[in-house]
Image (cartoon, rainbow, N blue to C red):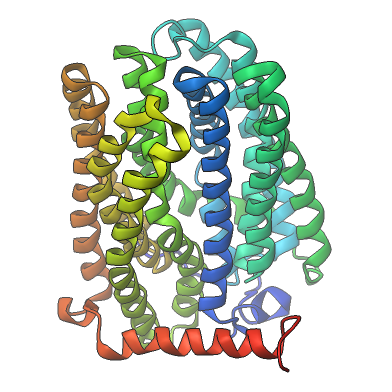
Length: 475
């Protein structure tokens, strides 16, 4: 349902610094935000890929599988127990309904409590089912994975506050920082300490990122208006109410998209998990720009919806996001196919030959999910997170059933087939709900000549910048 717009506390959309951020005159260009986010996500994936190459060469597929399982456990627990708070706070601050610093203080305290719950549940899960879903994961590795949970929640909440204020550089830089520190730590620790050292390096990267994000978000935010913290409980409830709808969708999607590693680990070897995880990591490059667009679309669509007078601008925003995503799918597919066929054998060696076939099976689904992310960003930003929840309520049971059937029969190949089918189903349903929310004609989403022309203009502007601003330029 649409967000509650009934007046209660003073409207920050009309008064004070938080409201200023929602005004059209103060908005930053969305393309800049998408570029910053895309650069950050690309850096994260590239760092993760380099780290996996190092792991593959030092500890082999089995060690790579151990690190993949530990990382997935950290991310799953953090996402489950964050309760959608990051999406909710991005929407509420973006709509001008909560002052950023007041929101940051409240959600960090709330996030710490939720993280403690997550750590306790993860420990209990290991005690009850560690010999099945977490087979091969030693206790010391589990400890490292669980310790990372509160820090992951902390820095993801901080960057959500930054994103809601259009502080794109800070948002992106925290992802880059985590990726770079992780890569350095793995390179330093995997040799003497193996896979366990790599997992602790990842944990250390989250600790440092959380600390830096806390300091920088507070340092760069404008002061809150007087009395901004008075309605903290009301705003937290409002944020959780919105976020919980996206959380259900995210939680079910997480089960659908990441539970495959644990089911595969139950039916096959840790080495098979390592081979499959590399294929997943490479094809995830298809999501870089779409995920970036999704991240910046939510607060921008919320701003436009809050204004109530800019429906036409919101429609143009949605159309352009979908068109440009469609344009980029073909070159993305070509690049990823070349990476799988040519680069993977060179970097990883003969032991990872099976990864090529798995990646090609995952590729169509990854492209479908790329479009889904943009469609979902518009849907949530328009105030309809329940449609994402409905999509995952439909897709997840079918996906999990397919995992058990296909993985048992075909192991990693079955996991790839089930995942691709899940991504494709999500795309179809997301497109249906996107059209229902926006009421845009389907043909208006197809790329046009002027959309292609935008790329030549962008490259021209980039060349002009390089000539006149960068060292060695003619300017």
